[in-house]
Length: 420
Image (spheres, rainbow, N blue to C red):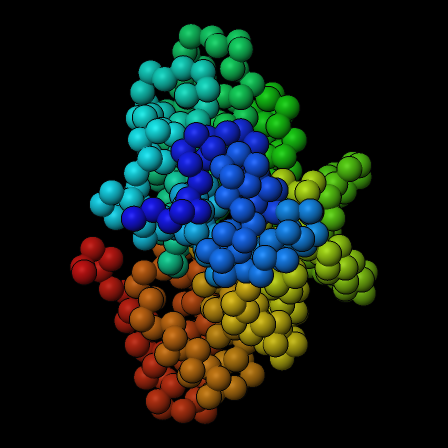
């Protein structure tokens, strides 16, 4: 049964409502739901388990909702499909009779990017494909999406190059295709298919600039900077970051993520003092939380994200001890947005604990990792975890029980992924 606060299909289909959902502007969403659906703030507050006064404050633009648990509560109360908020499909979406009017009225038929859709319908199909892939990437331990993403983009790319021209919708199609290519580039990077990732990033950047989509262009440049740093090219990482920072009108959170990239490049180049100052600046830029000028994709940028990268550079310098509290805070912070690459921080923390001979903490972390090891889809995460296990096995004085647990992780990583 649909709750009385469910957004009616015709309201959910409105562009202003969808825009508020896309950028996680829940205050604006509450305002529009009251305006277009006649659902009072009191009813919204009760359904979302938020004080009525707080709902009113949010609707006035005071504050924001950033915790995953609360976002899920809002999604369920207002019946916002999970993919629209970059969440996994909600339980009610698959229940008989519940994935109801939203599907039947707002989307009469699901269009595939391989269909002969035209105009706005085709743009929506491309964007929906990207959102499904992102949801899979962030689900559980990150499902492997590289092949699906690359093949999906190839379908769109072929049509862009040889299909009938659609002048009225050309830029929108190019922008949607750029986003899909960006998803593929990220997924290929996470699969350690670096040359392929570079090609997809370049194609994504070309399409973003053709379409004039500045928002997705910034995300692509962030990804390119990230890949350069990961592959041991700190000067390139820093150069890409600075090419963006030299421009004007960046929101604080976007400046923060590129400052962090700049700091990583400086640290790897041996300019440690300067790098630490810029890490501090990145932290200060994030303190005020999300802003209305932030692009839709910036939901994952947080203080924990910056701390995680600071921990990684400390690790790379051999300062395992300083990295540990940062990684622990990152890993165990329940408010942190759910991301598929979270396992990277688990692997890094394990390596730090084992290097510092913190046997009890390492054992506790290992026990939490073992049940899901065989489900890890990120190649980067699996290889980092293998490296961490090798550190432990190389310690002569490691407790025998911990050595056995490390052996258990190694065996779990070798399990046949096609065996239930």
